Length: 202
Image (cartoon, rainbow, N blue to C red; front, side, top):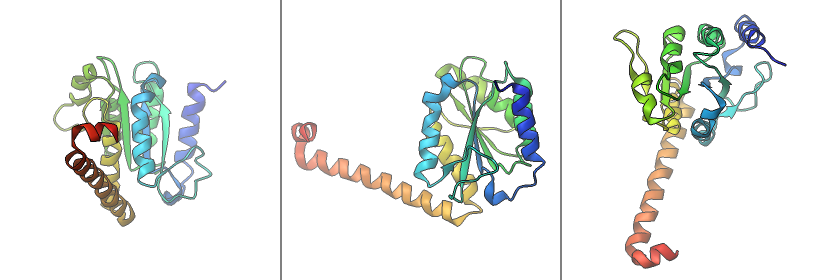
C-alpha cells in the first residue's frame, strides 16, 4: 500500500532529478478528494482537446510535447502532501496548477497558491458553496479562480498561461475557439432554417 510519505518521497525525488522541462508535466491537476473527479474531469477533457497528454510516469514522458499530471491532495487530511506538492512544483517542471476542492472549507486551491508561489494556481470551486473559500485570498497572495464546476475553463486558462511562451499551444487555443464558434453557427442556422419543430426532430 502506498503511503503519504511514499508520495512525498516521490515528489522530492522527482524535484531533485533535474529533469529536462520538455519531459516533465506542464500542468498539475490536484483535487481534495476523488469525489471531486466528476467535476475535475472536464479539465482533463480540455487539455486533451488542446493536444496535451496525461503523464503518469515522471521518468517516462509520453510522446506529446505538452503534458499534465494529477493527484488527490487534501489540505485538511494530508496537509504535508499539499506542502510537498506546492514546494516541489517549480523543481518538478510544473508551469501552472489547477486545484479543485469542494465543501464550505475548500482550502486546497488557496493554500497551494500560497505554498507554490510564484507558480500560478487556478482554483476550481467544486460546488457553489465552495466559491467564497476558493476566492478568499488576501491582497498579495493571488489566486485565479473560475466559477463553480467550471474545470474546463480552468484548463483553458492554464493553457493560456503556457501559450505566452509556446506558439503551438496558442495556435491550438485559437483553433479550438474557432471550432466552438462554428458549432454555435451550425446550431443557429439549424434553428432558423428548420424552425422549432424541425430543430427538435433533427
